[in-house]
Image 1 (cartoon, rainbow, N blue to C red):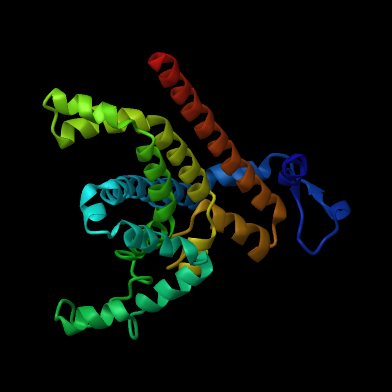
Image 2: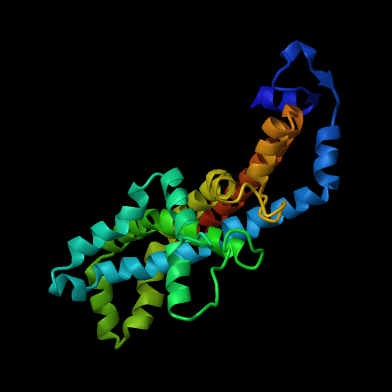
Length: 273
C-alpha cells in the first residue's frame, strides 16, 4: 500500500526500473478528477456494476432462499435437487462463465438469438454485447447469474437460524406470510443482510473480470469501469503511476463505504440491545 501511494506520485513505465521514475506530485490525481472518462467509469462502477447487481442479487437471492426453505419443496422431496441446481453457476470459473455467455449472446450463432429469431420476436440477431442499449443489461445478467449462489447460501443459513417459535407467535397474532416476513424474517436477518451487502459490494466494485472479458470496456469506452480503466492505464498505456492513483481512489471509496456501513450496523446492534 505504501509503495502504491509512492508510485501514484510518479510517472513510471512497466519497462523501466523504479530508479528511472519521474516525480510528478499530485498530477496523476488531478488528471483523474478532471478527466471525463473517469467520471463515466465511476458512474458505471457505482450504478451498473455494483448497485444494480447487488440489489438484484439481494432481492432474487432472498426469494430463492425462501423458496428453498419452503415446505412445498420439502413435501415434493425436491429441496436437495434445487439446492444443488442453485450452486451450479458458482462452480463455474468466472472466465468460463463469461466465455459461455459470450457464445450464448453472439449475434450470429448465439443460442438466445436463434431462439428469438425462430419465435419471430426479432427479425435478426441482436448484438447484445456491441449495442449500447443492451450491453450493460447483458453484463448485469452475467454478474447476477454467476454470483447469485453466494447470496442464496448466506441467506439460507440466516433463515435456518431463526427460531420457529417467532413464526408461531406471529401466527397466533394472526400475522399472514407477508407480515411474518416483514416483522420476523427481515429483522432477524438484518445482520446477515449487512454482511452480504458489504461483501458483495466490495467484491463487485473492484471486479475486473466480467467487464474486461465481456466487452473490454467497449463499445468505445461505454462500459469502462474503474478496474478496467486502471488496467488500461497501467498495462495498455504503460503508465503505472496513473494506474496506482486510480487504485488508491478505489480503495478510499471502499474504505469510506465500509466505515459508514459498519457504523450503521453497530448502531442497529446497540439499538436492539
